[in-house]
Image 1 (cartoon, rainbow, N blue to C red):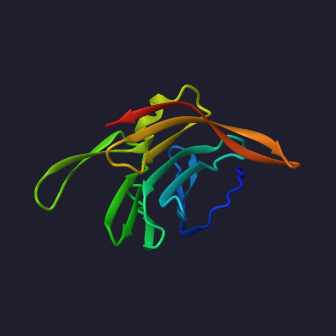
Image 2 (image 1 turned 90 degrees about the horizontal axis):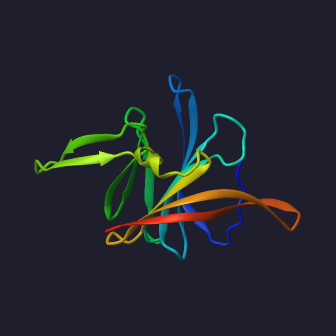
Length: 167
C-alpha cells in the first residue's frame, strides 16, 4: 500500500473505513497530529484494490501538539469532524460537489467536499494535498506518489507537480 519513513512522533490517531457499495469503493481515513510541525493531518487512501499510488488526498491544518484533538467520521454525510480546545472543524470527504448549511446565527455557508477538487489532477494517479496551516494562505498541491528504493526497501515519496494558492 504505502510506506514512508518519518522521524516525527504522531499522536491523537483516529482510523476509519469509509465504504460505498453503490460506487464500489472502500477508503481508509486516518487522522493524526505531528509533533514539532504542529499539524493535524487527514489522509484518505483507496483500499478497494491492492495497488501502488492509492493515496487520494491529504488535508493539513494547524494544531498544537500539546492540545488534544479527537477526530470522528460521520457515516451519513462522510464528514470528518475534529474537536479540540480551539473548536470544531468539519472536513467534507464525501463525493458530492457542495452542500448548503446554516449556522446558529442564521448565516448561510457552502461546504465543498475535497473530492470536488479532483478536476485539478493531471492524471488519475495524482493526489491532492490541502495545506490549510495558514488561514491567510491556503494551498492546494497536486502531487504524484513514487516508490523509491532506499536502503533495500521501497519507500513512498511524493513529488509536487504544481501548487495553487488560495487567498
